[in-house]
Figure 1 (tube, rainbow, N blue to C red):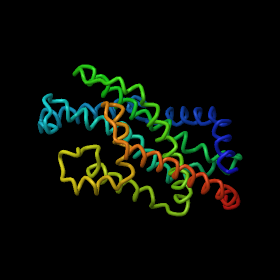
Figure 2: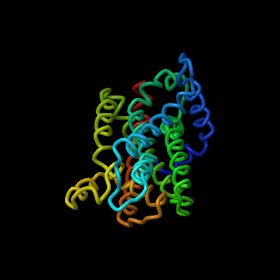
Figure 3: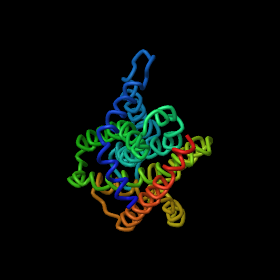
Figure 4: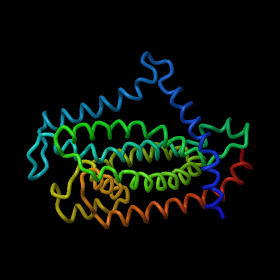
Length: 263
């Protein structure tokens, strides 16, 4: 019953979520000289700087690779889901707290707040994806499996919605949660398949790294972008997405009444 009501609410209020995302985008960079242009400039500069530094300054190469951009493409394919995961999970902890006045004034469907955040934060991932596709096409490594990208994207949406619902409730009580999540995710990027490959580390260390469920998200996105297939990662990703969504739905469904009373 809870799952059906939440899904129905998201579908009914999808236009509201989109409009709120547009409002957040309009407010981003307000007062800055370049304004909203920073939403595009910042991730593009970061991506371009990364490609140049990694491929041509440090000359990092994947074992057995020939081209100078091989490792850069490897990392870029992992950054596509990582961008949206890190930003969405960090912001989810303060979604309700930062919109307290809005929630007080109207009967706002708080279950749609993570969807708005995900839509806004998807911009950086889309730009990274565009850079990846352009570079892979230029180097002749673009794979037709990229057409399957909506599949891991759908699973990631379920995962982020579920976890964000839980974090948004926890963030009302624990105001330091955002900083804790930011630190953890900032460290995890260097201990994940985003920057490390299985051939770069020992088998034992790789097994430890893959204990992180987010690592399997990166692997699955890289599978469709680079034409690979890791069945175990797809199983873990699918199970994690379903579990997170169900757990998050239960938490937000049970907590909505308490939140309204608290406000």
